[in-house]
Length: 208
Image (cartoon, rainbow, N blue to C red; front, side, top):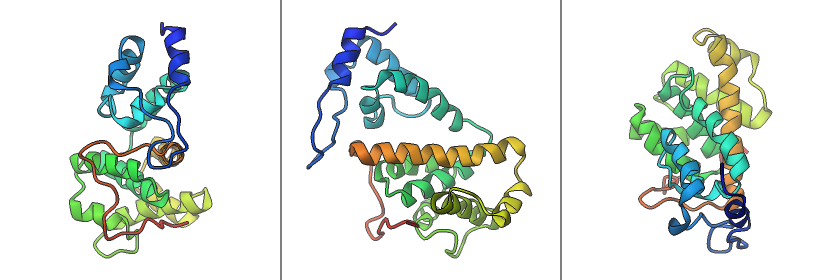
């Protein structure tokens, strides 16, 4: 079981106003030991366990411990990986969440998205070049962001391909990445070394 004294110290860790940096700093590398190391290693299935998102959120260990399995399940759910990453990247763009975008560009490429497709995500479902079902997925992400619901037309197009479990999972996936985006943006989690943010010629206005 985690040591309560260490956990309390981490919960009261470095804070700043966010000017010029993160509002809550990641746990320093030399403090990622013991129970904190154990918690961070649980993130291995989702991404690099020492990524800034995990090293920051582990300061709330109770939430971290419960949140991680849910997020991990969505990353290994019923929606095909390439389609999942389309939904996540569009959500990251819509929310102006540069950290979420940067991490999922890497994951998206591993799952079969091309660099051109990733760049095109910022232009949304109306951009030329998408396959019809890609358009449907991007519209679903936009509708959930703008309306908190999927329209009947888009739902029918999704239901023509997805089974019941996938139809339930899709709004949960998009909703979860809104939660992640809000947290990343509010804490001002900084990009990990080697990652790039939004395309330099794009403006993250999304669909707000």
